[in-house]
Image 1 (cartoon, rainbow, N blue to C red):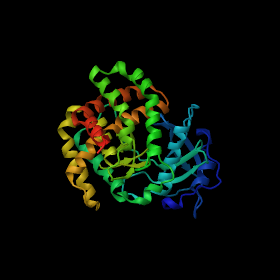
Image 2: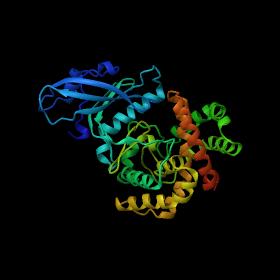
Image 3: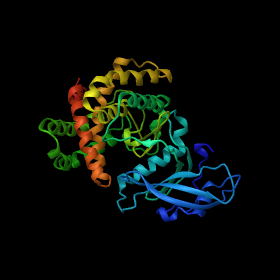
Image 4: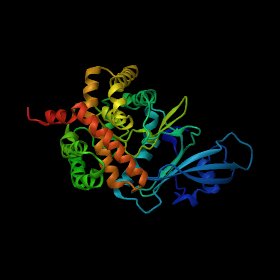
Amino acid sequence: MTARELRTDDLAIPLGPDGLTPEWLAAALSGPVPAAVDSVAVTPIGTGQTGATYRLTVGYAAPCDRPRSFVAKLPAQDGSVRAGVTLGYLAEVEFYSAVAHRTSVPVPRCHYSAINEDGSEYVLLLDDLDPAIQGDQLAGCDEETARRAVTALAGLHAPSWCDSSWLELPVGSMPKPGDSAAAGGLGQVVEMVAPAILERFGPFLDDTDRDTLRLALELMGPWLLTDTGRYALMHGDYRLDNLLLDADRLFVVDWQTLGVGLPARDLAYFIGTCLDPELRADAEQRLVAAYHAELLRHGVPGYDLKTCLADYRLGMLQGPLIIALGAAFATTTDRGDDLFRVMLRRSCRAIRELGTLELIRAAAAPA
């Protein structure tokens, strides 16, 4: 079953894990050969910051070659579903149902998807990729893992590189290039939440990082309006917690921040927030070169490494942007706060060492 053939029919969307019954799963999996589901054991997995994820262990009434387990994604179950979050649910279902098959990025197969009109109720039924395990954002990663991640990222960016058809993407959390109204609106959101972000995380940062964060938030509007002329599909929140890895495989999950923008924003966000600063400073040119080489292998024309490195430097404000939006809209958890603090320290240092704020000021200055 291809992505465009995913069924989004009148089967009731489960409102919680109790709705993931054998009867529901049998209907969701039905096709030329009926799925005789006898039992389903539902177990919560994941961090649950912007939704609820469950492993379904399935028993069948008769021997068959269907998967013995799946992963189901539902909205957050704590009553925290808000407008910014529902936009993410709409984006993720759109990705699996109409976008994934047009990319080369490794993702889990989607067996069923459904969402209501306003995005407050949805379900995704995905492959269970066990024994692949979730990356650990707090621990960070080594250079080899980072290389695997950035080369996989090229499989998202290259197939959509400067393809204007993606500017019509019906949903997305990131402003499209040239959309000054959307960019300005998102900049205003960041401006509104900036005092709360500084109050919440400032005490955990040293003076230098706190000043960097304040300046980055102040320049978010001009940064969002900067248009290099280069754009592609973006994951938006491309980091270790949104990767599943084992010795031989890497899969990208959690597509709620899908959008269109400067591709190197994803690259900068990953390298800037997932690597300890000393490793990042040592490895970043090699990692950017590996990403760039993979873009060329996928057929991206007219993009030299020098320009890619400049885009990488410019894209580093993706860290403060996603942290500010996440702190404003995601469910608050102890791990989430720890994660934001570590990411801010890594990101702020990268912004300083790469001269990102100076680049933004230069790009925003009148000709």
